[in-house]
Length: 123
Image 1 (cartoon, helix red, strand yellow):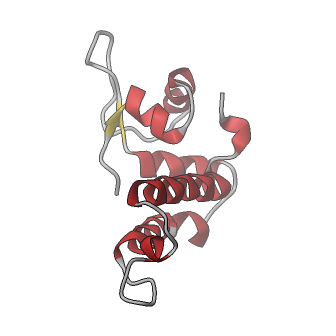
Image 2 (cartoon, helix red, strand yellow):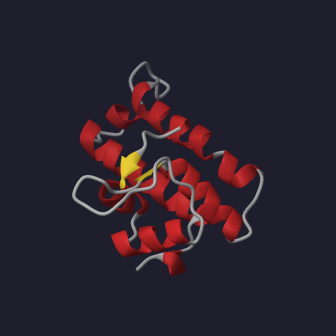
């Protein structure tokens, strides 16, 4: 499970605008804590719960969306584990750790959108 985030940060992670995320909450997206008016009093959301809500809303059920945490862990393992010769795979391939992390983060984002957040929802 991801760390609950305020609207601004959650929108960035979900790659949608803040108004879109607020609209989703009005439409029933799960919220850890509903916000109120005023600075620092915004809603708090769980990214994984919102992704699951979006997926189900768009007819994606079952295994695909529920595998996202395992997919994230597997991608993370690529950075930490043996690439076959006793060194992490990215080092064997000559890819800097930061660049490898950015690539895997982008891959995870693409996978999660493919199974749960259609591109048409982005504003």
